[in-house]
Image (cartoon, rainbow, N blue to C red; front, side, top):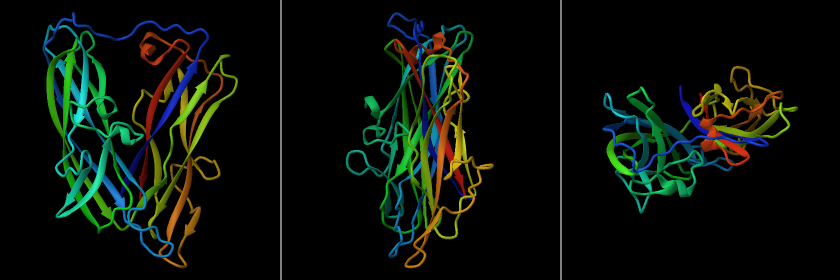
Length: 345
C-alpha cells in the first residue's frame, strides 16, 4: 500500500468595525538571560515519483511534480528556577551530499542522481528554497518561542516541504540523501544556543502509481459585518489524480497540519472532499473514473477529478482576544491553517 501526501492552505480573514486588540509578544536586550538549551529532532522524509508509460498518448517519465513532506521539532528548556524567556529562532538546512550549482539538491542511487528541492513554504516557490544559515528572509524559517511561566520546556514543529521536479529521465530506483538542519536561538538579540538535527531523504521512482496532476490552491474565506453571519462563506479548489493503468486510489482523506482545531477567530469551518459533481465523498472513497485516456493508441492512464471545499456556516460571529494581536491590523485579522490530503492506493 502506498500513501501520497500534499498540503493546501486555508486562510480566514475577519473584518470588524471597530476592532481593537491589545497585547503582543516581544523581547528586548534588557531581558534577563536564562540558561537555555535546545535540540532539533532528526527525521526521515519519503517521496515517490511515478514513471508514466510513454507512447502516442502516453505521458512519459515523471510527467508530474511529486510533493512530499516531513517535519522536525525544535525543543528548548530552561533550568529550574530560571526566568521563562521569549526566544527567537532561525532554522537553516544544508544542500545535502550531492549539491549541483548554487542550490540544487540531488538524491543518489549508485551513479545516478535525481534532482529534488526543499522549501520553506507549502507554496514551493523558487524564492523559498531552504538554505543553510546564515541565510535570511524567505530562504530560512524564523519564529518566536515562549516558555510559559511555570513550565521549563516548549516545542515548535517545523514542516519540511519537498518537491521532485518533472521530466527527469532514468529508470526505477530508490534515491537517498541526508540533510543537516541547524537551529540558532537568541534571547534579546543575544545567541544562547545552536543545535543540529538531520533529515534522511528517500525518493522511490517506480513504474506504477498515482500522481497529483491538478494541484490544489490556497483557499480564502472572508467574513465581514454585520454579525452573526447571514449567509455561509465558502471557497473551492480543484484536485485531480492521474494513475498508471491498473492502479486506482483506494481513499483520499484530509488531515489538519497546523492550527488548533478547524476554528479561526471563533469561527468554526469545515474542509470537505467532493467528487466532480460537487457531492461529498463517502468515507473518502474515490468511486469510478471520470475519464480513461489513451488506451487505443498508446499506454493509457486514468484521471480522477475532485474538489476541495472550505466552508464557514452562517449564524456565527468572530471573537478576538489579545493572543490574536500578531494576526490583526487596524480593522482586519488574518490567519492561515495548513491541511494535508492523503492518497492511498
